[in-house]
Image (cartoon, rainbow, N blue to C red):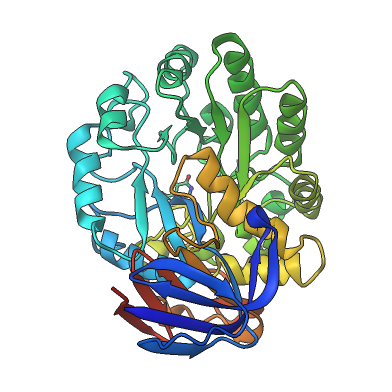
Length: 429
Ligand code: DOR
């Protein structure tokens, strides 16, 4: 089947492409990137005013299958990713049972097979994510994981972290750390600041994040291997990452849209959709994150999509679970907060949301080039829209961004010989 995408602006800094051109896709493969393609096609889409970029990849999502299918299944997560503009996701292992052995890795991959989205499982560092004993990293590598992490929990035991970095370096896969010194955050639910005192909520200080980042960097220097810092929220951690990169360590880092869009002032509402781990911080932290994004210290923007049931999010602030759904607001927030404010160019965003996650976790490359499989995200940069959590394809609606006015969104994705556009998913083979 031939699909002709006409008049879009094609942007791919990997191949120096930045032009208004047509794109012909035959049986899922890009066969022409030219102006005014005249070929007869089975379907023609006029994409004037849209920008086509390499397929975006979200390197940090939580799907809840197996275990909490009421909150998110692999299928509903895939639909949320597709609706949010992603063609690939890496899913964290804090399921029940955890992704800590080859069988569960295979289960996740089988559930996601033949979908428009590539789902890449991340294996747990420790058995059941209990932090006590190294999980079966070798067999999970054979089964196809792209990294190891106990995310949701840190790897608290330094000896286990040492083994994890040593062992994972045999497979050249990163360890993704959730940096949190639990002795400092016990019962903490929001950033430690004047606000935690004012709002009477137990504090979760930024110190807890930077301590584990520093410890892990010390271990990384000793063992070698690759370390990736998840959801960096604190200015101190950005600086520590910057210095570690200067020492040429194999270290990378990510931030989430909620950590650059919101401060802990919002917790004044006691809306549990603002409760997230690590917690929302201060404007000074946001400024440091922005500087880190601009100077290349921070490699990736990832959503940390963390679905939770309405019932549990209705508990009191101190009891409600941590987490924000992000797949369907991530691109809109990034374009609104970073692109339309001229903080990052679209090329830089393509690096943070497609090229870098694909490179760091060795996901399938996405390039706008003839002869390779089409793996694309279609953006409408100027569309103004209002976030409506009830329109999410995710099974969960725990978003603090409901009602926000955003500028720019993804309007479609094309991958694995499937096209999602104008709310329709079609096979193009
Ligand atoms: O807020 C969070 N929610 N942070 C995490 O690290 C885990 C996640 C979850 O799984 O709900």
